[in-house]
Image (tube, rainbow, N blue to C red; front, top):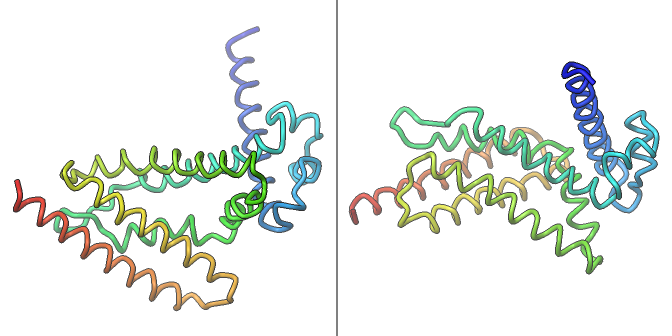
Length: 210
């Protein structure tokens, strides 16, 4: 088999996998976790159930694929630009808006569907929770490291950053209460201001203690 043909097959496989994850995300968002089946996802993606199981052996594997895709989008957002302010620190308003593009997207509800929908499953739910914690830390820690925070303040900075993500994710749930865009803009601006001020105080204290 030629290298070109192998490359073509790899590309087609990656495209099909991405198509299935997209279809699963849309299905979770529109019909919920309980009604999401591999057969329904395959139908939405326009492939056979057999083709789906070639890429994802089970519904569980497909769910983890959706979770990984969300983490990859977050990492891409964080690395897309450095979010530096004119003063050299982090442009928190810009970063908050950037993250809102992911967490404020109605399709992010697919992630909540997985987390909430598996809560009564003693086998799967702990794996889902552990996976989310592990992948989020893999995304966040390197990003914080690139922004030069003092290692002595890493734990505190990490807590602030996680608080910001909690607030943004929680705000995303307000979509279901039919709030208008001005409501989200006001609260995102306030969050950026609060987190920016807190990080600035941490950085200033770290400088004094060095």
